Length: 445
Image (cartoon, rainbow, N blue to C red):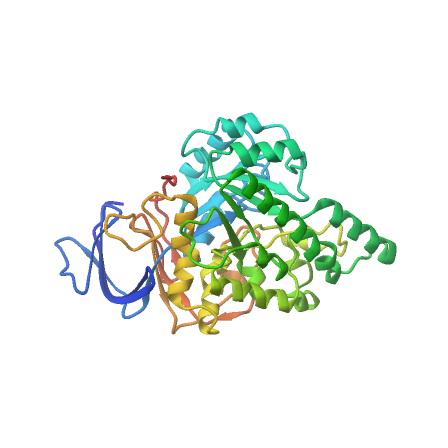
């Protein structure tokens, strides 16, 4: 943690520009950025050899399954996969067992992460129909946000009481993050599918059951509530062209309503169900190629502000069921996060500067993350060296997520994660995890 490290000959991507130079890390922070820096005494020198140096990705939506669902994943295993994928900080969701709907459950997660996590971390407080007083009493810095499932969820986490929703949007002291799908519309679509197919519903029906209309109806309600109450709203994992009309283009600064897209919705479309089946079943569903094209366009014009993963692992056995109703929704994605996003650079969809804005800068701005998300002197040294001229093939034997599979299995990504630093300490280097205790609890402005 206290090691002095000099990164030489990097192409630094930061705040809309790429500059060649060196970066010095001391005591976990960025001590100096210059065109050339002489190595101090007792300094480790890392030659980037012209590769790109980025601020680490801050993933604002992951499900690491601990506590209660650790047969699928855990904070230790998934944070290892995250740093291997260029993620230096994560924000974890509340639908664990028990759900994170009390202050005590929230702090219990921080205690687990303090012991096990290789990446910086924060946790959401989950909303229910009956914990509005808990949300109102949330201490400063205790949670990155309040998560509302405004669509189908497990247990008591579906918030469908209109009075409670209004109270949360009026009184939440932190950013409100929403999963938006209309449960009644989904149920109607499912009943129609069962009338036609019985229980033998093909996975290709998933984007029609969890339809674009169901997404838009719920998202539009969330936006209306935020406008009515002046709330800070962040809508998660947008999937449809229609929803893009709800958001303003342009920079994130000054926005009170922001939007996120996830890598699987940018890379897959409904045509891929034929090959990948339940492996790409997720909620909201992956939809059409036209929807994917609209999401990519909205990233470019600023209607979509943040790229995240919604990493949500399930076991191979759970995904292998042929019963649509039993197949769980969610994909393991953190290890492929940055590489998948960099494919948008190789395809000419986004520049490297735009990718850094969407994966680091904007997340720090939206959630008020203190002293992270940028290459700035004095900020924590959460850094990723990526080589866009060397490739990475996804192989099962290299997968670090506990579930042991990836929807990108066999894919050849056109970039490579060379090194990941968390608070100035190497956590991933030259294809191997470096175990350390450098990770920290995220702090907020």
